[in-house]
Length: 246
Image (cartoon, rainbow, N blue to C red; front, side, top):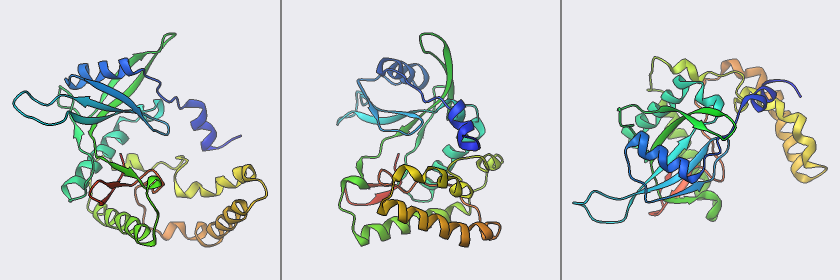
């Protein structure tokens, strides 16, 4: 196998922190006492749901945060991670119900931490976000109205992000990123995994349409930031509002 997807698979290491290591990170980096921590689903990073007690003068349930430990490749690109964090903050200011970034004890958005893996050490960028309660779309009935709302949310975010500016925004332009839409044709080499099925026929049809109608016109399209519209992101809040996932 060759190409960008092979390069990423060779160099990308997904974090494998224990719950104890994650708790110690939250306390040492962000200054928060952890009462409970549990793993959350993730793709190539590692996520934890973190419970911390409220201040003594306040009442209510413990506060919740999401600890994100970036994979080794993302951790090498601090500019990219910073821009992603700034985008979240920008969308929050624009009125989108996105998570907020909790700063470190030193006031930074991220911290590069060296983790002992037993046989060696690895450096990972870590961030802490506010937790947004809700259900992934995979856990609710998918209706035409819901699909419309998903598309509407994506369009609203895209429109708002046209106003976003940052001196390091060029870090988002990754031609070798496997999720870059320019790399959709690379999926052809994996279609065989579907066997001879209706799913394979549909995928082949979409790939052919993409090659015939999109690839030749890519230079005419306005670029945008990748937003994973999948069955786990975005989410439905407890009051039935749609928002981007964690």
